Structure formats: C-alpha cells, structure tokens
Image 1: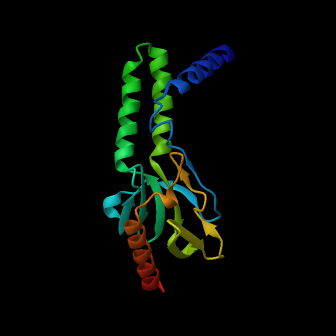
Image 2 (image 1 turned 180 degrees about the horizontal axis):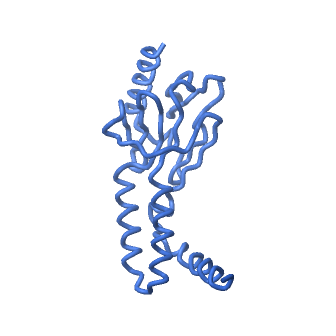
Length: 176
C-alpha cells in the first residue's frame, strides 16, 4: 500500500511542474493582515462596485459587507481553459486521474478571493499612485497584496481607484 501511495505522490510531483506556465502558475495571492481572510469568489455583477487592474488580471470588489481582491473573470476563464487543455492531453488513465485531482485543487485555489469586512476598515485612500486600506486599528491592510506577481494596490487606473475610494466612503457613511 505504501508503494502505491508513494507512486501516486511521485506522479503528482511530476505533473505539477507541467501545469500551465501562464496565469494558472502565477495565480498566487499573497497578502498579510489581521483582518484579511480567504473567501469564496464573488460575482462582480453582484458587487456594488468592481474595478479591474490595468492589465486585466485582478478585480477589486466592493460589496455591502466586504472589500475583496480576486482574479478577474477573464483571467479565471483563461486559467480554466489552460487547465482543461492540460487534462485533455493526458492519455494514461492513472496520469489522467492525478491530473484531474491536481487540476481540481488548482481550480479551487484560484477561484477564491482575499477579503476584508467593511466594518474592519477605517478608511481607503488613494495616495502616491496606490490604494491604501487602513484597518480600524490604524494599521495597513492589503499593504503587501501581491497577485500574479504584482502589487495590486498600485495596478488600477487613477480614475478607477478614486471612484473606488469615493464609493467606499459613501458606503461607510451609510453604515454609521
């Protein structure tokens, strides 16, 4: 039994580097902050406001309860297409089973968001070309948010970022 488990683990390790080198491989989301949590993907159509980075990879959403960073719909579709293509290439039944498991895990990981509750944020501002999120304790939130190897807080157009700030402040005022 240990031999089978070891063989499956080795096959999975061999397949992982073969996953797409495009957005799927760069779909990592790194962020620190006490109030930030990993959450379900949000439908941008349901958001109060959704803005997308200038490169089109990441969307920042404002809902009535949360601020969330997630991969854009375009990026998710591209990743999904690449993962589906990878599954189609596998002709060995065991390899196909492993690829299916790995692809399912990757799909689950990229189809999520990093979010912070509105109530946990004191303010959002746009300074020096980047969005600044300040927690209720006065500390920065999303300050080191990297998605797809870029600092997403500085990846939005000035117009979109300022619109986001205005809408966030309007929402906070409504909630008081």
